[in-house]
Length: 69
Length: 359
Length: 164
Image 1: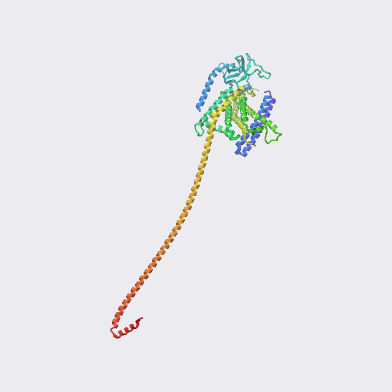
Image 2: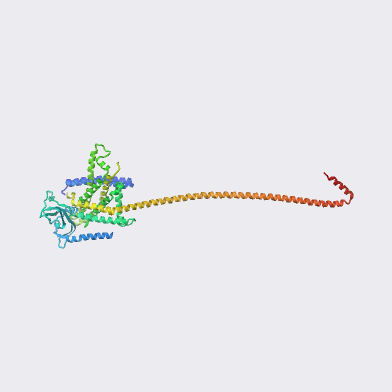
């Protein structure tokens, strides 16, 4: 809470990384759905799984940062 | 259905009423006290030994808390049973036999007769903790959710037993959800014949997480607990998934972990290490994900509400409430989404473990 | 951090509660619900298959009907053709028969006429002979009054009559 600490910067970096990864997945999935709307449910599931894996890694990093910070 | 709900409410009211009158007592007003949003939020996120219902200023201007005391169960020199009201919100030390206990920030510590607590330099309590199996707020909330779930689904099951017509009433609400879990989660991630074995687990998991997420979002009693945002619960759920996955692992699953077929021999030990670590990181990620998502939601909504008190201005209230409402809507989505993701990933892990064919 | 350390009490109670919940729901909710849903799906599938089958049967019957009708048409045409031919032959036969009959009648009639004519000629001949004899008698009576003439005639006839 006292100004800009390394913890805060670390959390910011994690968010940037995770957001970039998830946005890439989402945009690719949208394109794929646009190209092949008939298998969009399968693409959606794959998208969620991939996004969730990134989210897991990000959360893991957040927890580590939090515990050390 | 209406009868069931009425009955449920009646039972709940009967359980609660005697406590609430007994539990209401007065505390000194702390109107001059600085509002600490962090403490308030952490208090709401954390588990508690009493269930706080409402606070108000009574006619004498004293702050009155209505709380429901919950039973304390300690295993420490035998079984110690008493109600949490004995602590008087942490102000009193309870004597049980020759042991003294006091409540500090929602945790019970062993103390001397005066309730002295020793702190280290990081302000962590050094006192010994007894083994605590108390029925805390989260446990009570979980039992309420379990009653709701059992009520809902056994009622639906009765309707199914009766006649084989089109679904109606509660059936038509629950059936698409059940079919969603069955078709889009279980049958999608594992072979159909094997999926049936795990369906009861996956269905229970989905509805348990979802309904508890929703109960956590209810801002007043008997909701508002942060059960699915508590690491203990998510750890239990993740561990159950871990055991279900690995106890049902097929030969090829274990082969893929310890001696990856198709990979060069030199790399295989390295892959084995990675895969072995992966065994534990998967449920670990499950645990952290649910905990962090739900806790974060609670923290954000509470922070938005805290803004009013931090700024000490009513003018901020409309913006705060609007943003809070938006977050609440988002949290409703997240409640379902996290239940879906937890179940989906569990199904995925189990599906990978039970897959029979080599490829 | 306090939030990242699991609380043994909650772990204990949630493990027990979740386990019991799975057990209870499996026994009293999921089994009957999933069973009912499955059997309903099977019923629907079966009904759809039956409907499909019935449709196919109807199609089959329709096809058979068309085939039978076509067959009947062909048969009818054949029958009509046959009948027409029969009529033709019958007519021809009748005509032929009639012709024959007519010919026969005509022939008979001709024969009859010829016979009658012959008879009539014969009778006429007889009558003419009678008249001739009568006339000849009368003439003779007249002639024979003169004796020389008698003698001449007798001689003449005698001359004419040949005894061989």
